[in-house]
Image 1: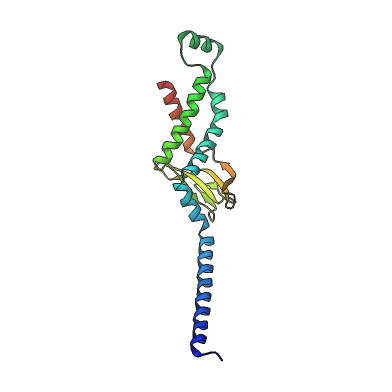
Image 2: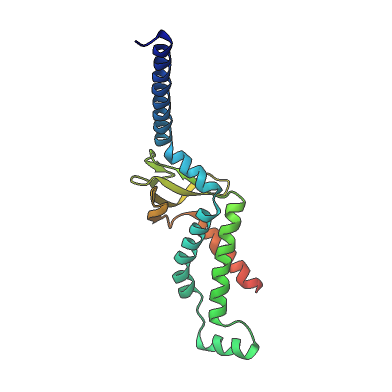
Length: 183
């Protein structure tokens, strides 16, 4: 025959187990509900996420730089005779300048990750279907530079859409031209 002490202990243990299950479920639901905000704040402080974006920008800039920074035959000959940089050296320096500009923009907090999961548009840019955006802020307001999705389980960037009308590219072009003239 069970004593009242064991019955009370069983009730207490049941209440503790039920409380733990309810608490764990509540925390899980809260994390699921706030997963986009948590991911955006994680990417904001993560150097690997910033480096992935910088590499993506360098890859987007590579064909533009190769087409923009070209030299005529006369310029190539003059450059070789004068001992100036060749076309390939200029292109490589321009890609390095793109990397430096993007990195400094992250350091100055001009490039930021944002949760745009429930937003329709931002500054007239359509964000439907995207969960995150890389936002350029030069003091005039937030502009979407890149909208993308993240595979949470793989921890990878999925679909990416670049906003070519962003003023980031104007500032980047001016920076690369300024550095090119200095060199």
